[in-house]
Length: 101
Image (spheres, helix red, strand yellow):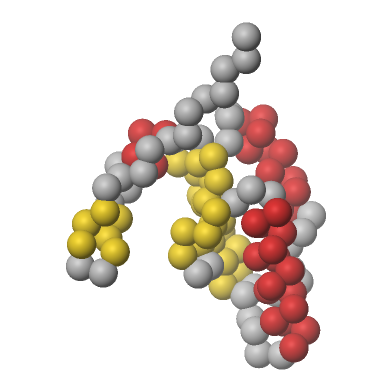
């Protein structure tokens, strides 16, 4: 399962810029990758891990702004069509599951 966090945060004042930067840094510290400027994605292993990330995100929300969180299955994620400039990019593959023996 994939989690996408999309946000639109105000940056009109110095305090708002600080809050937006702090939220972006929190997402990076949690293992999210920057997909676009205000879109971050992370793979998680099922609903329990998703709920844990949701609790952590909720406890670190900035006071203002809009945050949307989407989930995608592995198959849906693989079917995302990506372009870079005018060239189509190869689809991203899901990370391999870590197997412990």
